[in-house]
Image (cartoon, rainbow, N blue to C red; front, side, top):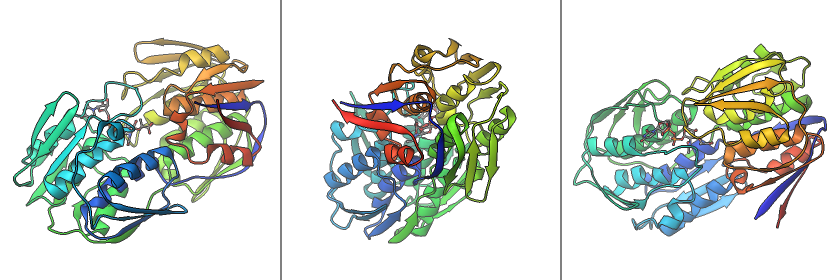
Length: 417
Ligand code: EPZ
């Protein structure tokens, strides 16, 4: 088991360079198997979720080469074998192999995906989308067999604008006969990045980034070179950390428009920000005002930044509220923030935070990826040595977190115990 130790209450200054987006990468890697040719993806983050998907590619006999931030995927000798549960349960995004294998071979056999325990996380919308395209789905215990004689275009309305269902349906529909329309599609930047990748391979997808996506099926996809967009959630996490303990902390290599909802909330509470073309310069301010946030689908306030943002709200003067509308179980960080000294009560899906409160180091748990990011942010602010357990969750999504924070003056270490 790995633990993180943080000596908090230090000023952070310098530059943090943001890596490629986890939630784009985890879809791009499965999408790459839709061709038989070699695909190069660059700006790939070195995180354990990337490793887990490469393990699945190896199982499928796909040739994978990794070299500093790039990954070269060659599916020429690929075999469509069942993806064992030990692989699928390592991460949620293993489910993108369902859409990709169905799109390529008209058959996918795999187990229910894993990932953070932040809610029930059903995949019914993915499966309904596959069925609309002509597939049948058989589910025995945790195992899913999705197969079709032929995939055909369809009009699909998503009851919820689901990121995963939107991408998975795109992957399955890209080589189907005819035209597919996804209505009430999710609009996250990662979806645009995946659609661009598929179009670079010869797909005909339009409307990605709006709520109606049109996919005209093509017969063949070919090799391409593609770049992963910067990780807006990693960027947002470090900007929040800068608002807690930064002095001219530069968060570089970002697309500021992707985090508009966060930046406007930060400006509202009084954080000192300079927003450049591809960077944000952030310093800790005085007398932050309280505010309310409600998580929403893009371009609303991202659920994935709700937990780190809650740490900042403990430093605001007065009562703030955080309402979580996407996941049923995303307040698991709260008991640990309370252990550090925060004043938070949770009722139904709303947390009420009263600040400012001083945070003092304690032993805490990273219950999930972004709860872990919240613990890091809190530990950097708290006086004394904070010890975080279950840090494997954090390493799933934050590339070189120790190095990035150490380089800007944090005292943070990771140990195997
Ligand atoms: C993606 O999860 C991200 N994960 C999540 O990031 C992120 O929190 C989420 O989108 C929302 O932005 C990846 O991209 C790998 P959804 P996803 O389908 O696709 C319900 C992180 O910390 N739903 O948009 O699984 C679902 O229960 C992770 O990086 C159904 O009911 O999310 C949820 O309430 C955590 N049926 C809502 O829709 C379905 O078939 C949105 O989920 C699918 C989803």
